[in-house]
Image 1 (cartoon, rainbow over the protein chains, first blue to last red):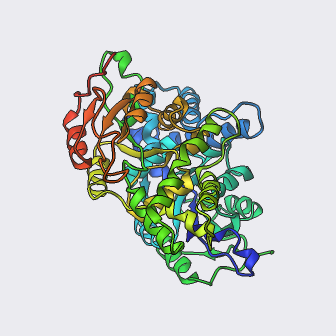
Image 2: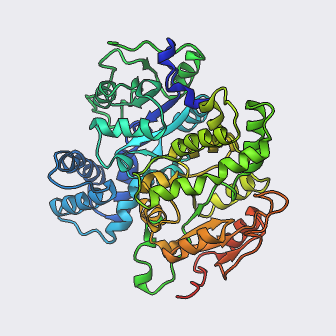
Image 3: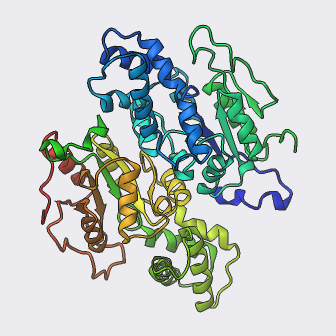
Length: 253
Length: 253
């Protein structure tokens, strides 16, 4: 019974990992390559990769205003559209159909190991995105990329943005699981720092080309995450190997 | 582009059906048979079918208190557990493990046409439950029954219970779709009355044995629902036949 995870600790047993939550942009899908191609198709003549990178660079500042309370929760779809307008101005280009181009974020291609790894993992545990993307965005992206999620969690159900702890905690609560029975998977050390602080288990999978050939950050695990895997196939094998009664040691606990 | 549904009406076109939302208990799965079997296994000597029916009879009154504001939103998992205690008292039986028995609601078997019909429909439109079950309950039920949902919508994201209009409207909004681009599918005429009042399209699929061999309600469509189908295979074919540019006429609009 999945629901037996709650209370297991009280009986002196380590809780097993019952769900894996995933960062999506960068961890599951290649936003840079996919958005660059969409920009090239929609805005002839623009330096597409520079435009895509500039668009993405607006992402964190836009969410920061929501996190800091300067504005109420606005779904990422809207932030992406506002950011597109900002970047179009700075590149001095006209976007023929901005809503159409904004949907590029719903059509990102997965890294090659992702679908097979998630399919394997789904046999062991509940799998769901815990992304800053909305339910709408994550649903359409899953259909495009073939991501076999059990449900969609993350920013929308918490009405907040990672790394706010409530985004991780609301996702665990929606599954009626204690944080220690849930593992956050990300290619970004910062995401895992926040997940660990909220009480979740952590897994790091490097994506060394997310930011292009000259990437300098997140090339390696910067802490003793519970699992460090080469890709999603390796992750699935390592989670499966934890097995009944296995669990993982809780760093710092 | 899925997102083009918004605004399509403004351009003088009928919006297409872009998502189908489903009632689950009774429409997708046979709660009565499944819960009766779980009761028989967990509580030897009790009249299992009568117990299951009595348990389910507490469902609507429990939700009514939330709908009417007599208590705040409480997930259905908790209401089911409270109702189990009530019914156990009235049957004068002890439940050896009430949390375990309550998980019977996560392990209901689908009607025979459901998985094939949903799989076919998923090729055409987004499919998601719009149930009074929680995200946790619907997620585990989907894993048990093999329901290939794109995401989980319904009571939890609205923090309310059908037939409150906000449950249907929050589910459409989570997909960033206008209600007229979304079709509610149910075996219950009352559910469809509420969905239509909220602006959604409607489809009726009869489940004439949901309440046992003597069922008297919901044996037929009691209104001119947009689609009336014999089962989920028929539903999938009828939705697919609407095709690009087809749409369905909006009764009363």
